[in-house]
Structures are given as C-alpha cells and as structure tokens.
Amino acid sequence: MENENQNLDGVIVYLLAHQGSKSEGVYPFLYQGRDKQMVKLFLKGDNPFENKGLLVYDGKKVKLSGTLSRTGTFVVESVISDAQEDVNQEASKVAPEPEA
Amino acid sequence: MAFCEQCGAKLSPGARFCEECGALAEDAPPAFSASVPEQRSVCKFTPSSWQRSWKEFAQHVGENDLGLIITCEAALLKQLKAPSAKLKSMLEGFIVHSSKRGVNYAYCDLEQIGYVRSDPKSIVKFLKEVVDIARPKYLFILGNEEIVDVIAWEDPTADDNEVESDLCYSTLDTESPVNGQKYDFDSAMRVGRLPTHPGEAFGDFEKYFKMVSECSGKIGEIRPYGLSALVWQDESNDEYRAISHGEVDVSPDVVLGDMSGRLPMNANLLFFNLHGSDAAEHWYGQEGGDYPEAFSPQLFGQMKNPYFVAVEACYGAKYLGGLTEGESSVVSAMQNKCMAFLGSSRIAYGTPQPVGCCADVVVGTYIKRLADGDTAGDALAESRKELCRKTDGMDDSEVKTLAEFSLYGDPSVRMNASKKKGIGKLFKGLGGSVPKGLHIPMPDVRNAVEMALAEVDAKIEAVIDDYAAKHLLPSKGVADDMTQRVYRMKRSGRFQKVYSYRAGNLPQVAKVYFDGQGRIHKAIVSK
Image (cartoon, rainbow over all chains, first blue to last red; front, side, top):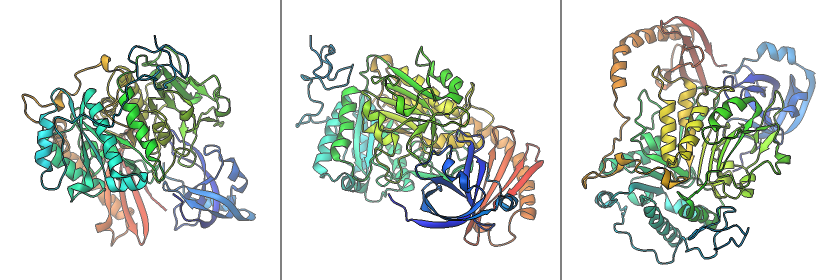
C-alpha cells in the first residue's frame, strides 16, 4: 500500500539508537526543530544497518522527498536540496538524544 | 516400489508426497475430494442459535481437540476475488482432514454473528462468549489485518511507535500485553493466522490448506538448518543444539549472492537469528560494521520443504500494510510450503552470548518443542511460559517480546505426530461435559501475594507522581488525556514510570527512573 509522498526539511544527524535491542546501531535522523520529534530516515535501496547513502549529508540542512512508513521511518526517495552548509556543530547543540 | 516422478527418489508405501523433493506422488489419493464426507456435527454460527450449535459441536469432539476457524468472509473473498462456494468447499475438505489428525475445527464467519466487527475488542468479546460455552484449544485466523484486525499496543520500550499482535486473541485481554496479570498459557487458546494480501490469488491461498492436510504430522525426519549473524553465533548455537548435532551457518560467511550449495534445499525446520528491518525485505548478517544481505523472501520459493520457520530478526514477521510475497518473508514462506512461521512484528531483543533473553527464549524454546513433536501452538505456549517464568516481574523488553512474537499458519500443525500424543487434555470434554473456558486474565496466587506489596508500591508511586507533577508535566489540561505506566528495566533492575500525554496536538512523553526504595535517578521529557 503506497503512502502519500511528502517533503521534509531539517538537519540530518547520525545517532546511536535502539540501545539494548537486536537493532542497536547508528542511524540517520532528521532534526526538524525543537518542537518536532526527530524522524528516523532510510534512503530507499540502501543497506538499513549501514545507511551509507545519507552519510554525505551528515550534519547538513536538507530537503527530503519520500514517504512515511507505518512504523514511523521516513523512506527517502530523493534529497531535493542541501544547503551545502555544515551545521554539524549547531545540530549537536540542539539535537536531543533519541530515547533508548 | 514407487518412485518420485520429479526427482526419482523412492516413495514410502502410501506416501502422498515425496519426502526428498516434496512433489505430490502420482498415485496419491487426493487431499480434497469434490464430495466431502459429512461431519458428524456441524457448527452453524448464526446470530440466533450459534451458542447451542457450538455447544453441541464441542460435545462431539470425542478424543479430538476442539478448534475454531474465524474470518470475515466477505472481506476475505473480496481480497481473494473468489466466490463463497469455493472457499466453503475448500474449508469443508480441510476440516475433514483436520479431524483425521486430531482437531475438530468449526468455521465461523464473524460477520454472520451480527454484532461482531473485525476489530480486536469486538472479536475478543465474542470469543469470551465462545469459551464460556466451550473453549477451543486452537484458534485459526484467516486473512491479514484488513480481514481480522491485529491489536496495536503502545511500545513499552519506546524503540517502536507501537507493537502489533495477535496475543489478545489468546489471552482474551485487549488492555495490554500483560496488564499486571500472569496468564495461564497452558489453558490459553493457541492462535495462528494465515496472512493474506490484496491481489492474492485464491489458488495460492488454497495451496496452504492442501499442503497442511498432506504434510502435518507426517514429517519422517527432521532436517534442521540455522543461519545466524556472526555476532550472535554463540547464542544461536546454544539454541540450535536443541534440534541439531551441527552448528548454525553464519553471515558474513554466508551472503545472499553466494548461497549456492550453502542452503540445504530440503531443510524442513529453519532457524534464523539475523538482522531485520522495517525498511527492507532482506535479513542481514553482521560482523562489526559490515551487514551483508543474508536471506531474502524469495529464497523460500526455492526451498523444497520449508515447513517450519522460526526467526528472531527484528520485523521478522512483518506483513501489515499489504506487503506481498516479495516484500515479506512470512507471506513468502506461507505461500511456499511453510506450515507454521514464528516471528516478530517489531524490533526484537536478545543477547550475543548464552544465556539468552527475550527473542532467544521464545524462539529457542519453540524450535526445541517443535522438534519434540509439539504442535506449533503448543510450542509457542511453552515459549511464552518460559518467557514469563521469572518471579521478579517482566521488564519492558520482555513485555514487548510477549506481544510481538506471533504464530502464522494453522496452530495445530506439527512435525511428527508419533512423537507426542495426548497433549491438551485440558481442552477436551471430560465425561461428556463441555470444556469450559477461563476468559478473563487468569487469577493466580502471584497476584494475591503482590497485593501485599501494593501498598508500598503505591507510596513510592505517589512520591514519583508528586515529583513529575512539580518538575516534568504541564500544570493544566492533560489530566484527562494522560496515560501512566510503570516498567521494570532489565539491565539496571530499576523502574521507569512513563507519562504519555498531549501538549497541543503533539504527543509527549515524560519518564522518571527510580529504584525500589523510591529514589529518583533520572527524569526526562520528550522534545
């Protein structure tokens, strides 16, 4: 069943998540601001445990196109734009840690 | 001596299928005949008289176990694009065959009852009425969540947004996976579901029933195969040794593109301890940061007899949302001669080394009991008992494990009928009476003992609530909307109290971590 395509803006950050589970690992998340929950990302076609496809955008502001899965992961179809601005430092200040 | 037309192997006298390659034997008697012998007693689920019919049906099970097949027929037929007569004819044949292997199934179209809808609360309410009259040992659900819905509980671990499950149809409790009770899984119904998907051909659906009729309880030799991520090799072998003299294969040694010669095509009891994802259909191995693709749903189509499959992977049994054969391993397995599949709907939990926990306990116990001759439903009941055996309460990951592992396929199937007989006496009528059901979470001594500690717990919780109210929660407007739960954390032995509420339109969570003396160690609020 296809979900509706949508665009999301934010900063991509790689964080350790699902600690203590069989899926414990470092995953890309989209930080969209203090008022919104971070969204777990998956680049379509990528290896879901290595997530190398989005690594070049780590710490960068991006606009993503994709679909939200029923499990809450945003499946990225394409990276529409990236600001080419390294905001890693800024993101690390403001990004909350995902809950274990 | 007869030989298989397909592979040339010798056929046992009277064999319906080749034990080597699984092909139907040429001279085998048909599993389904056009004219099905009439049942001694047929249960008619009509709004006015189903109770009496069900009681009479239950009184005629004799030495057999009592079973119930449920679906919402119109929705199922719409999905399969098949006429009602075709489904009924097929099920009549299946029910006759089931009675020969020890299970008397009645078929119930939930929509015919009148007041039952396809949602879990409505169905559980109906099932409570059913077990009040006579409790079936086996409950076989036909169709995916669009036909008979799954329950979706809040995830106690917060690793997922929720946990989908069929557990409520076993415990007959929709409130939560545990709800402060300890269930009697000896007496609970054994539940299995045959998931379908939109666009599925009726012929593919029908294949499953024919195969179960031909093969359940008739597997002469158990041929196990295990595949594990390298990082979980030790724990995997600890479980696998219960069913095999060998050891599991490991990935990255085994990778998807190079399976030739590694995957024994005639294995009939398969065990997987790999990584699984909500975003991709494959299962993955792991060595350090290397996660190679190790198994794909399509591989079930290449195997000859993958009759029983048990998988510990996260999302190992995902099928919701209309996933098809190419997108879901459980859907692919069920369409390719798998009789019973045990797997998780969400992120699973386990350890790299023995002694395992959570998924390791459930799957490890399950495969051992299957190999010992239990039915798939009995084996899962034993697994759940093992998971809940701890006396000091279940932590959040154990509660989630209980909910997320479900059985797919007919819960009454087994590998070898001669290994175990007489299981489930609890469910049979004694002296002609009807087996009654316990339809509420089973009352137990444990709860009585825990009552004595409740006062102390209440005092501690009041301290935590007071702290949360002062420091974490918004001052107004959330009381009606807020849910509160307390979990014990496995690693630290401490507790967390979780407050879920809405601030504006946003879902918010506040957590307080504390110990058994009520000392607060940490408090957080979602952002």
